Length: 338
Image (tube, rainbow, N blue to C red; front, side, top):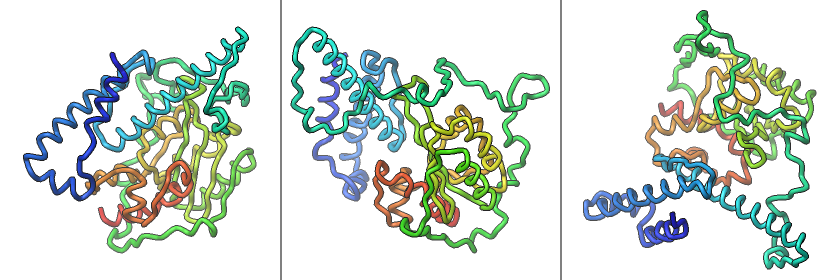
């Protein structure tokens, strides 16, 4: 497959298309809607072909139909390309150095922090993390099995749906605005003592927001690198590489506690990572991403919900803790509107 050709064709199909409110206005007319749908069909077909290029990614991946999932797919695809290029440049530099050939890089002076630093140890080596990179489903070793031994029993199965229905009158619930960042204590948890204190704090609250940061650059199946937790009054960031073996034992019960609401956004993968890396199983979760779909919002991304409900324009790369901290306010609004 001519990879460059498809990228060029894809980028050429987008200029001059109206955006925002103008797009929705024109989309009402058949003369505009039909060619747009054809462009969308061809674009998705090209992206699927790009995503299935095994010589680029190693293995194929279908292009998502949801717009926000598609955006994340494109970001990850770009990251994969840059990682691949970076690795190839490093390999070329190594070979040329061995052959005594000088390697000139015009961008080297501009690049103050290289993405790939070969001298940095893999986290699994630096922190003695046992990683299972087998290309198969992981074992739920901490779950009970059914009487016939054929399946695992999730802690949720012990509860009724009614256990998670809010007893309060929804109409009487008013959104609670979060404290400003300046007035919100922040704690970086890097030791077992900090985990113990965090568990004690979470045992006293009725709800908390959660977000995970995961990376698969140095491991095939990937590793959970950070866990962000926010209560109404405090923010925590857990270095899950340093305290990986202790996260589950200290936080497993509060995540399983059905009386405590866990607020997350688009938690499909977060749930998998919590189960796989820490043996944590969540009971009583409110997913603002799913709530946005129930409410038929214009977009489902957390950035859009922050802007719509909270008036906050956020850059996810720079304000990840702010996003976690504000999830509960979004949850208040979404619960109120539902």
